[in-house]
Length: 308
Image (spheres, rainbow, N blue to C red):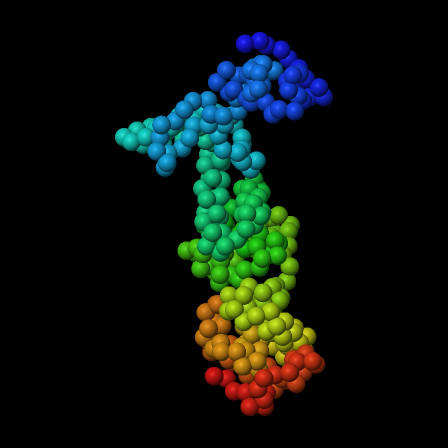
């Protein structure tokens, strides 16, 4: 077999068959013309695995490189030996030796954040921001003596707010095992130490998610958003938390549009008690003529609406 290098502008081709796609022989490291067998190039770099694996489908394929380096960790380049079966203790000791104390704490915390985020259906961007917040707080050493889970939950709460996917404290509490009070303490500490802030929670932050989970349609969502905004602007629901106002506005809208959604259905989605939704609705009801948009045409007589 003859050997000849032919390259033009970085592109290899066979001089006898310039339009024929070349074939790469990874075993020999050659680039060959399939028509005449001319070796156009040699020493082709194999970017595949360095060895074959005979593991079943559940095993890991030992490839040339490992997982992507986490920029939030120290990034030490060390060799990790994997042990199986009865060598579990050796694996554990090897991991302890290869990872620094700070990195072990961060890896554990990142795992907690990812687990909570998966329960909240949070995006990777939220996870990354929460990890960065925890990393910064660890560097400041201000979290010492506090619950790691509470600190992770507080970082996740702030990350959700800053990424525009606001969650309530109740939703965060449902994704972990710590109390709202513990999360609140860590939350205030993080804001103070990192000199960061979160946007004021508004009723509109929850409307899209709540209406989507209730499957009540875009038109009802638009009306409910307007009702909640007017209730806040007119100071009708002073002292009520935004999530409660949002739930009550959705309930009011469903009654006006004759949508079959009870206060209990809405409360289950919003995390608000049924009685709280009805009480807020009764507070809003006397101002019904001011709350709905001017072009809104209710399907029932608003004067006859009563809480179900």
